[in-house]
Image 1 (spheres, helix red, strand yellow):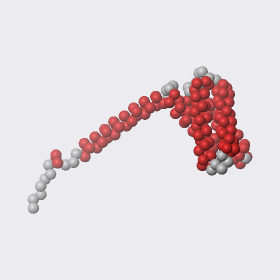
Image 2 (spheres, rainbow, N blue to C red):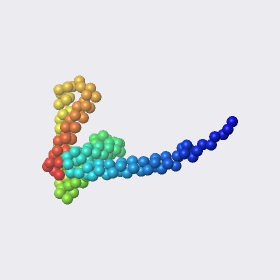
Image 3 (cartoon, one colour):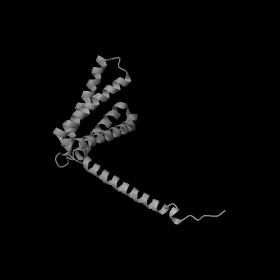
Image 4 (spheres, helix red, strand yellow):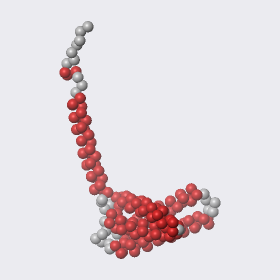
Length: 171
């Protein structure tokens, strides 16, 4: 039996595939970085939708901070933990909204943002508390999940009103 030699052109071009893969990956990374750069510029913009996205992110971070502070201070009682968590998270959220969400550091002073943002937070708390009180009177048999969904709906409405008020009036 004769051994046939395999010509060079019939072998797999491994170095060529590796360089094509590497070059393709670099192109993919460059395109991804370019896309992320454009997204970052858009998210830092002054239009309503990027501000709303930043508003929601700040609100989410503020809620995480509230929960952590609430849990850290819970040993002193839930009311104290709630009060401290609410005050600190609201103050931090107001400042982040002033700086990040609405880019208003040159237009609105810290004190003004805290006073007006805090008043809006208190109004939101009053609305959600009132909504819960109304639910307890009008639908006393409402289950936990239904009540939680109602609170989420009320909170979303309050958050929308807060965003619009901050955007149009405060900042």
